Image 1 (cartoon, protein in one colour):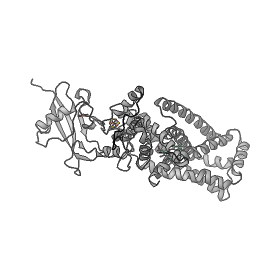
Image 2 (cartoon, chains in turn purple, cyan; image 1 turned 45 degrees about the horizontal axis):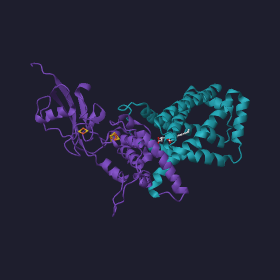
Image 3 (cartoon, helix red, strand yellow; image 1 turned 90 degrees about the vertical axis):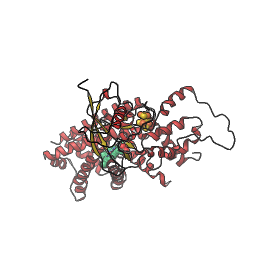
Image 4 (tube, chains in turn purple, cyan; image 1 turned 60 degrees about the vertical axis):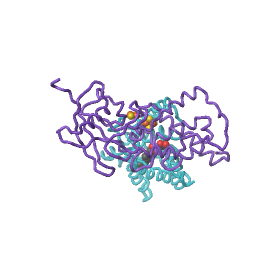
Length: 253
Length: 202
Ligand code: HEM
Ligand code: SF4
Ligand code: FES
């Protein structure tokens, strides 16, 4: 027990939304199977940096601790991913943590992911079934289609696909892959399909679908393995048809 | 409809890249390949193209206006990206970067190329084999032409790939992979045509 194994962390910190970021180094005693969050918790217990200087505890977000809520995303050794499923044993040391800069930093590793929820509202990523009377059961969904759509429904709005995209940045208002793929999900649903045109029109607006430049980083980075670029290409086809319908036809709703 | 302006512009940008600019590029490379046959053939072909009826109308509508739109909007698109190939070194991300880099190189090349040939022609110089031979006798200009032509061809071939995605033609991952192979073949074939033409002038 004399020589305790330590894990070194270099963490990018930021005291408030508009403050300048700075780095601090920490050393955390190694435990088998530890993940990045357990190390952050360890630092929180005793917020002293590697040189022995006392500091403030690090702020970060977390919730499910099993890679389904998306809250704990951060940039770990240069890659955006979930800190709850980032195992220290599988990471190169020193481990570098930074916030996902695509989002406004609230404090330290904590970011404001509102833009994704706003985008979901913008593209109407829901199925409107509320009425003033009982509408009865909707059309059924074929089982094979349900299985396929289930893959799209795994999105946890973690923001990794936005962080990875070269076209989602401060110079552009591109909404990114995450809300787009949800449009495909809700348009695939037999009841949701009744509002298909509305959602397509929404993603044909500014900052929408056409801002995709096909770097395909999103599909390579999505922790849930969602076929984002297939969704985007499918929506490209749907919006092409929608635009022709609107221009040449009359029944385009 | 105002909120759909971006959609329209981006789709127009994509379409113009293939029709007419892409078609013109292929046609231009193929016709100039007559240079490998001989001085006579090249001059005859250049003459034929240069003396088409309504030449100025055709040039303006098929080449200059679409190219101007594609290039200016393309510059805007290129400079709104924050390239991140160092963090995400995937094949398609590199193609994304190269599409933008070759677009800018192609723009510089085309500007110079038009200046040297069409503008010179407007001042009374004749565009013929001799003219190209003079230009390409400088090793610097020869290198510049190689880079410019390869850039334009790469940009067109890879652009064809993303065109097929942009319009929803290649949706499945498999069709996109096959499109990658097809566009690589197009890139190699057109590069052969372009380079062998250049070599005919030296
Ligand atoms: C020989 C002339 C050119 C040809 C044949 C050509 C062709 C194409 C094609 C076919 C595309 C694909 C469209 C799509 O993604 O749907 C494209 C995209 C693009 N072009 Fe060009 N282009 C030419 C010149 C230029 C120039 C001068 C620029 C200026 C910088 C430029 C910038 C771009 C950019 C940035 C894209 C990517 C658009 C995106 O991914 O959203 N191109 N081009
Ligand atoms: S699509 Fe994937 S990467 Fe993007 S927010 Fe959803 S789960 Fe995260
Ligand atoms: S805490 Fe929910 S994904 Fe990590």
